[in-house]
Image (cartoon, rainbow, N blue to C red; front, side):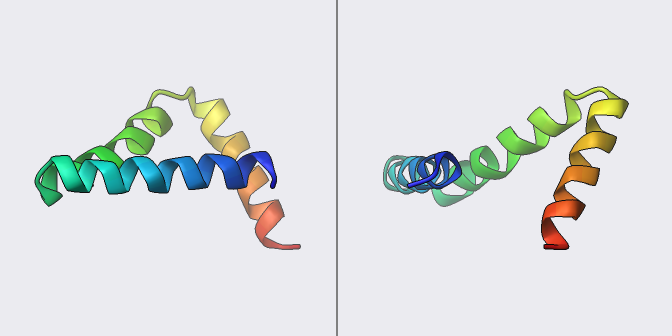
Length: 60
């Protein structure tokens, strides 16, 4: 299993646990908000590099 697959599986597990313990809208805000805040915390040059790498991988 690749590292990205492990991270995705962990994210799904955490998301399911949050849905059990918290109201669905709080869990949704956490699942959507954490990556959004992490992206916004990047410098503009890091955001450009991330978008460029993502586009290259999509073109495979």
